[in-house]
Image (cartoon, rainbow, N blue to C red):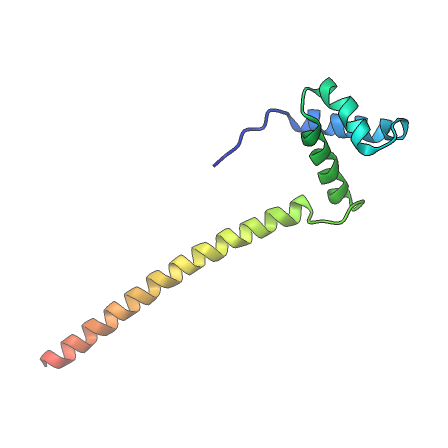
Length: 107
């Protein structure tokens, strides 16, 4: 499941920067986002998510940074792979043990 991004990182950065630069001109963050989003060509919820993500990544807001989330994803993938390999090794070990028992019983 690979979702394509309609907006380039440069456009996202520019949009977030616009919100941050003009935030003081509006009564709330949402008002700033609602005003700037149509100029970028996205819905306000998308722009708000970009702003919040940038605030988390820069330490201005609590949350899991993009880098940490990516690291967790990589580690989860590695754990899954290791579990699969471990299961294969268990099955092979059991098979070899059974073959050894069968060989001893026939002797």
